[in-house]
Image 1 (spheres, rainbow, N blue to C red):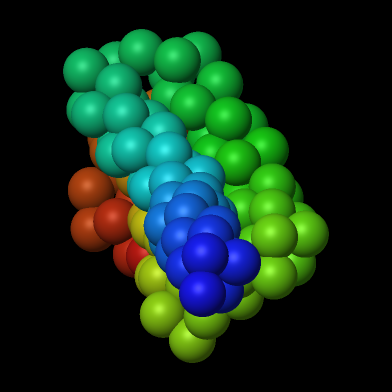
Image 2 (cartoon, rainbow, N blue to C red):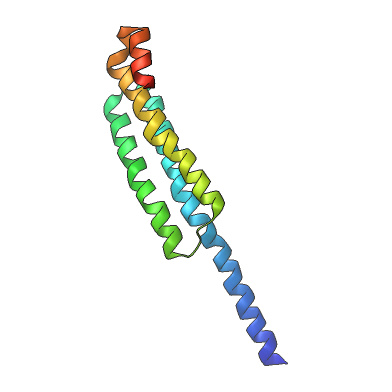
Amino acid sequence: MVGKTGKIRRLERADRGRKGIYILPNAFTTGSLFAAFYAIVQATAGNFEHSAVAIIVAAVLDSLDGRVARMTNTVSDFGKEYDSLVDLVAFGLAPALVFYEWGLKDLGKIGWLTAFI
């Protein structure tokens, strides 16, 4: 009986540690979202260099989240959808807003339309 109890306890401890690993890929994705948000905020403040660096950081974190999920065998449907949403913000919205604030704002509606496309 002692052997079984000890084995069960070891398995329970392993499961607890495993639950923490599930968060890791989504933490990278959240970091990418934060970097994209930071890029947007800095672009509206006129700090375009900071915006560019933040978008690069988002790209690095984006390249890591999927790899970490596969390495730790924690791929999930939520993670895939969350990554797609963050990619839209980090590589669609943030760069478009940076370009608009940097050089298209003075063009009025044409600049807005160009940034949208």
